[in-house]
Image (cartoon, rainbow, N blue to C red; front, side, top):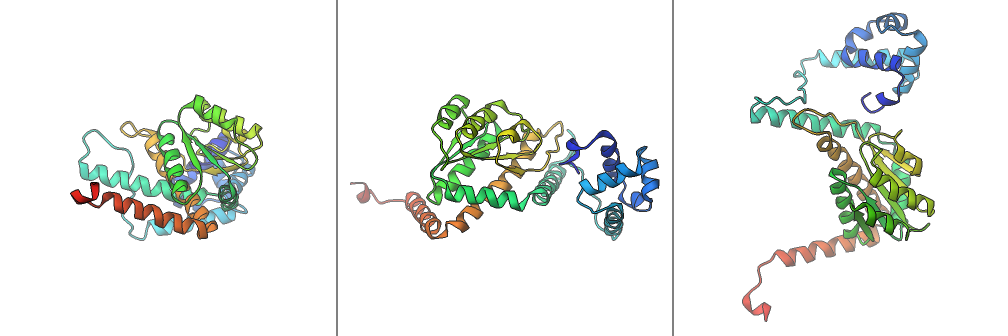
Length: 286
């Protein structure tokens, strides 16, 4: 619901908010009752149910009843992610751990396997992959580039917008460009993706807003969970968790598709790092 709420009309958002706030209470309502409770119409309730992935309101109502029963079965109270200034470190750990789990679960649930498969296919066949990201997303871009490099792929992460654009001009139909932007509106990321798109390059967007500007230039869109921001935890921290999950999915998928080449390359990188971290005797330096 958090992920798709921005795409809903205001009346549909009222239905979704009511359902999220009180699943047990809403499960007891008929479609007419929920429409009256949210000051909407029966048609709006049904459209909201369908947008949430259910054939109709009856199916949503059954799911809510099941959720309510699960919540009443003795499960510990839900921990909120809101961190207060006077929280103990133990509470901070518990709240952050809960938020991370929820972020990963939301991302996994909302990730389209068809789009993911198409992105993996493109990356596995790419001559070269350029990845764009700034700020926290730039760290994720570096992570994806490093992973691809370790299995023998040619990959570059760009956080400098000028360098990203000048490199994007060199891409072609055999290449892939990946843009990572939680907001879907980061100009320094969108511009090189647009240039790559215009060059005929296969483009991929990893974003929390699939309706954002970045989608105009993306052949494949991988949606991450909407970040939950608090005063002491910027949205960038939570969004990076979901982006890293998508990156791991891409990496494993590409490694599977290119296993004959990826396995020896990965083994060689492990061996090289192991030798680097092994102390050498003075004789070995002569």
